[in-house]
Image (cartoon, rainbow, N blue to C red; front, side, top):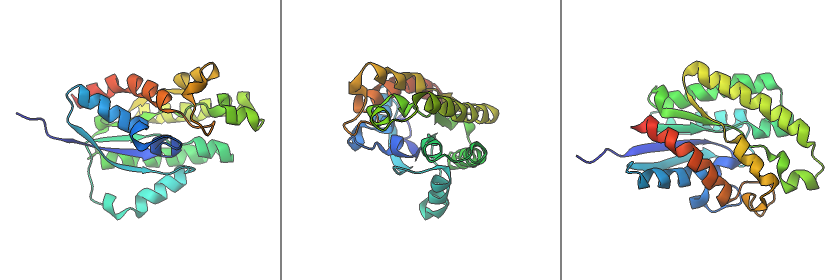
Amino acid sequence: MAQDKISYLALGDSYTIGEAVDIDQTWPNVLTSTLKKEGINIELEKIVAKTGWTTDELLNAINEDNGLDTAKYDLVSLLIGVNNQYRGYGIEQYKEEFELLLQRAISLAGKKVSRVFVVSIPDYGVTTFAKENNKNEALIAKELYEYNSIARNISDRYGVKFFDITPISLNAIWDEDLIAKDKLHPSEKMYVGWSEYIAPGVYQLLK
């Protein structure tokens, strides 16, 4: 008997929409293609993400999307927070709004916690953009560690799978091909690395 199609919703910001790369090169699309090759009948049906979005902006977008009012997806991913850190928003705001977003993600997955996963924020402090704009690499790393710790702790509390791709993002220190032409966002090569790391865990969630 053929497997029912698995509908996938990706929530996030520029890292999810794939700023500076083609849409088929983004990690949600690469992940989908990888899972298909492993026999999973999955389709990336919707992306709610925009470059520059913070947690409150993603929340507003979800709340204002009438198509999500009654929608249910078989798989939902969440990657958000870098713009909170970049703009200097308070850590408590991130904690409160990330939890609200995770609750929405679980609801959109039909309240199936096992069908939701969170991806950590990559460290953009190692990019050419950060260096050319005199960004404090150590401070960025410290603050993103705090953000990712919050996301991991909240995810753990809800029983949601958390994928820490931040160490992979650090490979850009010695491999410039991992950064897109805008000198800031991940390249297709980076997204492939993320997907290779995430795919086995998501495969287990779906089996």
